[in-house]
Image (tube, rainbow, N blue to C red; front, side, top):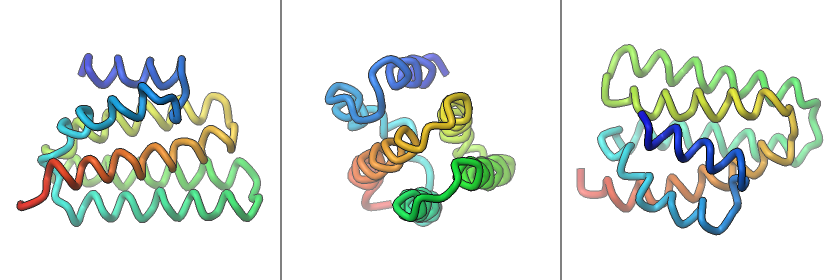
Length: 128
């Protein structure tokens, strides 16, 4: 999982919206291309919903809970489908990072990053 660990470290140092981090997500999306489009769409919808909730100025704790629910869904799916394991590892690391700081602006940045990653995922996985 060293490529994923390296990406998470880069995100921690530079932020989700750093130009290099966003550019790297194009190649990084290849790690997840075995996930079905419908499954990734489900995850994207949850992340997009979290981004919309942040716009309504909720308490940070309620957003962190939503992130943990997302992680639990991905854990469940990874137990049923081994192809999701790499994605589970990545999301788990990211949620741990977001939970440490409990900073809604970082969570919002994550939702934007995830939308970027989802676009690249769809490009590399299309036709399946």
